[in-house]
Amino acid sequence: MPEAHAPPGRLLPLRLFQFTATQLACCAFPIAVFLGMAASVLVWNRVDMPLARYDALLIYVLVVQLAFVALRLETWRELAVICAFHLIGLALEMFKVHVGSWTYPDAGVVRLAGVPIFSGFMYASVGSYICQAFRRFDLHISDFRRGPVTLLAVAAYANFYTHHVIWDLRWMIAAGFIVALWGSTVRFTVGGDRYRMPTAVSFLLIGVFLWLAENLGTFLNAWRYPDQQAGWHLVHVGKLGSWALLVTLSFVLVAAVKAEEGVLYGDGEARVTAPPRTRRTR
Image 1 (spheres, rainbow, N blue to C red):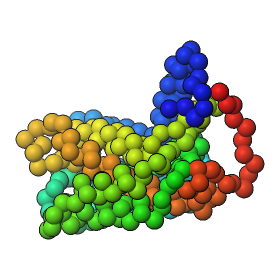
Image 2 (tube, helix red, strand yellow):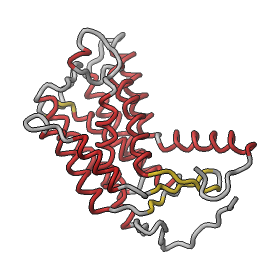
Image 3 (spheres, rainbow, N blue to C red):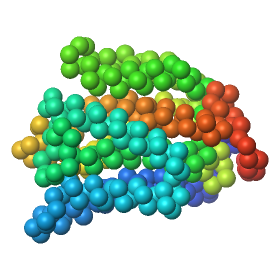
Image 4 (cartoon, rainbow, N blue to C red):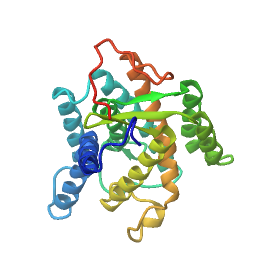
């Protein structure tokens, strides 16, 4: 929804195009990862390669990550957050593979507890997207209750482990997020106009696109769920909620970095060291 008055109807198609183009730019790292997966499927299915597919993907994603920093598409501070989310994701992968939640069917020598190291970059790509979105959309969060949201994000991550031995608390945690984020909005810029969206809705929308990405990842045989061993089919829609919860942890990590860079959450305004940019108001 627009921040002030809605732009004229003739501008709406342009704004949608600009929004889509910016989203694609924010997804540069995830897109690069999936292009690598697709290319590896084509090559490794047709040619007997001396290097295992998962090991080649690890080299590829490392080169992509270094290129992003060298080209200044990501800062060193953002890289630190992305690496942290890589480790968090890798730890989750190791546990989930151990309990049989999914498997990595292709060959690869560079593994940790049966998990190919490149898999952590799929989680890192989520952090990369959020870092890019903060910058490219000039994101500001109003009424962001960092303490409760951080505790809930940690609880959501812990629940991925604990629900194997105790009750699954994801719905209680999701309800907690709705309460903690009630009234919180994400403000973003598209084509010079400011818009806003409920923060909880933004988490859900990211979860939807991550579920779609997960379907693409399993289709490209990056990993497989037990019910996909006989043949690929859509990932259960229940995974959508899992991704929406998991992305909150990445969001909290990135928000903490942005706070250090000068953005304060809770009052709906950004306090930065540089002079504010002039924006058109409609």
